Amino acid sequence: MATLKDVQIKIGAVKKTKQITKAMNMVAASRLRGAQTSMTGFRPYASKFAEVLGSLAERGGSGAAPLLAIREKISKINIVLCTSDRGLCGGFNANLIGKAESFAKEKAASDIKVSFTNYGKKGRDWVRKSDYEIESEYIGVVGGKFGFNVSVNAGRKLIDGFLNGEYDEVYVVYSEFVSAARQIPVIKQLLPIPPLEIIEKSEDETKQYLPEHICEPSPAELLNEMLPKNVYVQIYSALLETSTSEHAARMAAMNNATKACNDIIESLTLAYNKARQSAITSDLMDIVGGAEALKG
Amino acid sequence: MAGNIKLEVVTPEKSVVSEEAQIVMAPGTMGEFGVLVGHTPFFTTLKMGIIKYKDVKGEERCVFVTEGFAEALPDKVTVLAETAERRRDIDIERAKAALKRAEERLAKESGKQDMDFMRAKVALDRALHRIQLAATRRQ
Image 1 (cartoon, each protein chain N blue to C red):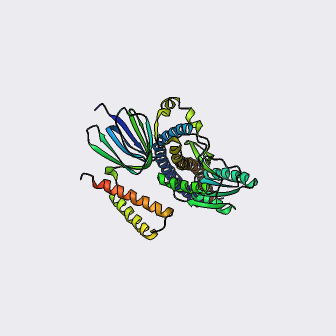
Image 2 (cartoon, rainbow over the protein chains, first blue to last red; image 1 turned 135 degrees about the horizontal axis):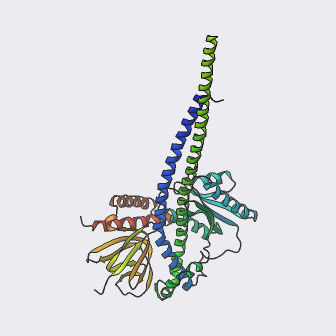
Image 3 (cartoon, chains in turn brown, red; image 1 turned 120 degrees about the vertical axis):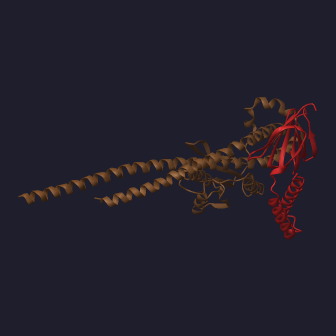
């Protein structure tokens, strides 16, 4: 049986762990707020952008744009994998990597060469261990503060690669932030850009006046200008979602850890009290026994 | 003045300007244009440059923008830009440092017409615009 001292030391250790997890929980909570603010800040831009792009696509006839053209034979693809740099956030990274892995496997099975663009250390470490190639990696983006230029740099590279025929399709794997308690890994096609009409249908009132716009240059040219930007916007939104999800996941994980610490402390305290009580009892027995012996 | 027009400048990171203006001048790719209230619906891309507008009190205000596009409606102008900074928010020291970096890079790469060269040129342009605009700031 553990001695009193041992149990006491153990309780102290668990209490310290609890302090750390609690602090991490609070840090994650405040970062989550920050990340959510950037997400809300991005929304006006994103919605206006989608609206304009949708109406241009409708008018300009989007058949000619190279970024929209679907290739007949797919032999190489690139996957943009967004994960966090740091761990201690529960199954967050494992879920994302699992999603990417099964997707890559499926593609590889039909003789398609898969390469990766990595955001975040955790995903990169996984790709390094696997047999897939890393095209480029960006560390220190997800989870921190980053600007739009981050996604412009990456997007430019992907578009160049796509146009040069280095890959025929580009996908992004990221974590969608549904709520603080729920984040789901999602795969989305980046290039060729999937048909845009869907976005437009939900906004009937804006549709009425948009087609009357005078455009300078022509709608088709404008569309060509805007398509690459659409890629940047998608990447940026994926990064924002992943960052927000990371903090939410960490907050939940740390909350659970703190609760687990409380449980352990409780059971250890019980064990400690029992051990102390039994020590007192046996001491008493000794004294009483000794006194009896002296009498006799 | 017939009335004011609402000007909104938004970047992916935040909304930079959202206020009433008497007139808005913006650098379109096919030439600078001005918008007053009641403008025909109009849509264009923007080149790097300065959006000037007169606020309700008639004071001229400037916003530096890079790559973006603008939509003018009869009662509203929306500018979506990758970066946008009001004149008073420009960081001169940073722009000067960027200018120096770009000049160095251009000197090193002179003669080459590749991507790096083009990018350095754009960076140079950006820095110059910022510095010039900041210089007109009232102290």
